[in-house]
Length: 104
Image (cartoon, rainbow, N blue to C red):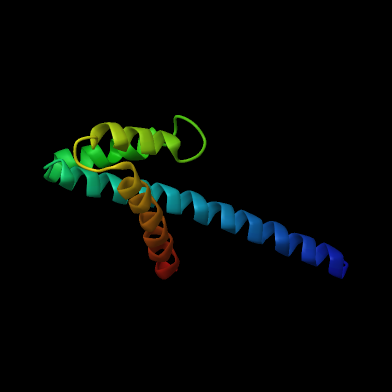
């Protein structure tokens, strides 16, 4: 083994770890957004959990955040404007990432 091989393996492991963290953070962010939106919509209990799950699954439509944004924008059209929703998506991503990092 050379030092180069060791570095290459370390970079590959770091890349895989970062990709996993990003995936988990996005899924958690979507759940947190779903819970937040459910509260704004007056949903509680199982209805709130079910709604949050629909937000999580909406992220599987296409790569990126726009599919989640469109779902929430449609559902919250009369309640939240675009800048507020985009800011909430951004802040929830940071919150989700911090939560995941603190679990380890």
